[in-house]
Every structure is written in structure tokens, then in C-alpha cells.
Image (cartoon, rainbow, N blue to C red; front, side, top):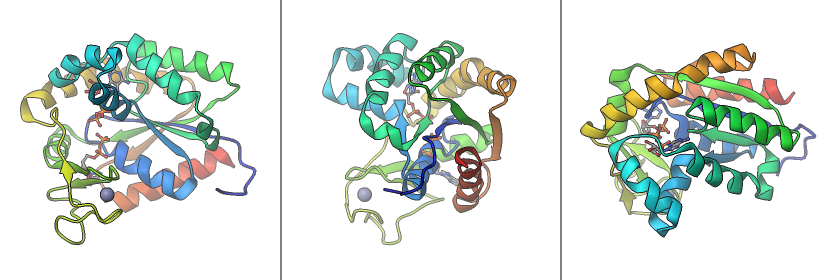
Length: 226
Ligand code: ADP
Ligand code: ADP
Ligand code: ZN
């Protein structure tokens, strides 16, 4: 762990499905020791474990809708209570509704934490569909790949862990993607104005190469933790 005396940063990654939130959150974990907190990953784990929250969320996720604020907030609060979040957190895919944004403000105030930046990752809708439909992840370590844009160096072998089993998400299909994009535009995009009004909004161009976007995000993290 780093020996610097920087205060814990709370970084929000905002963007439509396929914007690159998960890809960049993992890179920030590696570079800055921060913790990625993905409500999508937490919900998928709850579905796999068959918890009551997971059972309630499953059908909504398969249809590309948003899971209720109540369920998502309960999962998020549990995760935020774990001690590793003191290293700083990258919220990947949360908040996604105005209600979640307000609940996050209250939760952070309780913990005497503040949002360092809410970063809007801008990608066009066509790119987002291409990205989501070619996405797969390593079953062993969760590293993300893409059929066209990010292949493992050795075919069929994960660069990070050497694993050879990969998963594709059930909701990464053409039918569901339309619903997810609609949910983003209707319920999540308004948060861009919300965070602009709070003076914490930053914007990055999500259409460039992965490494260039990582540099832009790294500069933002350095700025907010300085
Ligand atoms: P999100 O978490 O926002 O849904 P991901 O990080 O999972 O998005 O990225 C979606 C897909 O696009 C993945 O297959 C990933 O490898 C790929 N990808 C991510 N960033 C880029 C980029 N800048 N250019 C091209 N492909 C990318
Ligand atoms: P993506 O990486 O494509 O943006 P996620 O993995 O973040 O997708 O989310 C997958 C699904 O999980 C969403 O379509 C939604 O059903 C549910 N989900 C994840 N995060 C939230 C949230 N903050 N609020 C409501 N539903 C969520
Ligand atoms: Zn792996």
C-alpha cells in the first residue's frame, strides 16, 4: 500500500453501459491502490449466491432495467462498511438515479467523506453497442476483454492470471442493450447536471484508446487527492 498521506478519494465513474467504467476502475485500482466498487458486480454476485436481494434483482437485470434503489443502496452500504474502502473508492455504475445520488451524499456525510470528482465518460451510442456486444471477462480474475478492441496477448489465455475460462454476461445482447441505454438516458444522465451543480463534475472523452483515457483519469485522481 502507498505511504503517501493523501486523503481517501471518492471517485464516481458515470457513463452508459460499455463506456469503459469497469476497465478504467481496474486500472485505477492498480495505479492508485483505490478500491473498485461496482454495483453491477455486487448484484451479479448476489444473483449467483441466490440471496433475497439477488433473487429480486435477477429478472430486472436480465430485462435491462434498473434494480430498485432500496436493494442497490443496501448492497452498497454493506460494501462501503468494509475497511479496505479507507484506501479510497471508485464507484463504478453507482449512483444511477437521483435518489441514489442523494443517498450517497448522506452516506458520505456520515463517514466524513466527500466526492472528489464525478467523471462523465462520454461515448456515442453506436460505440457503446459495439463495446457491449464484444465484451467478455476472465472467469478467474474478472479482467475485461473485447473481441475486437482488447484481446489477450495469447489467444484464450488471460494476461493477468493465466486463466483459460471466460464469461459473457447474459444481459450483453442486442435486445437488452436498447433497454439499458434507455435507462441510462432517462435515469442516469440527469446526474451529470446534478454533479455539475455541485462543482465536482469532470468529463473525459471515452472514445479514445484505453491507455489515453487512463491517463486522463489518473490526472483527475491526482488533482483531487493532492
Ligand atoms: P462499462 O463498465 O462502462 O460497462 P467496460 O469497461 O466493461 O464498460 O468496457 C466495455 C467493453 O469495451 C469491454 O469489452 C472493454 O474491453 C472494451 N473497452 C473499454 N474501454 C475501451 C476503449 N477505450 N476502446 C475500446 N474498447 C474499450
Ligand atoms: P454496465 O457495466 O454495462 O454499465 P453494470 O454491470 O454496471 O452494467 O450493471 C448491470 C445491471 O445491474 C444494470 O443493467 C442494472 O440492472 C443493474 N445495476 C447495476 N448498478 C445499478 C445501480 N446503481 N442501480 C440500479 N441498477 C443497477
Ligand atoms: Zn484472469
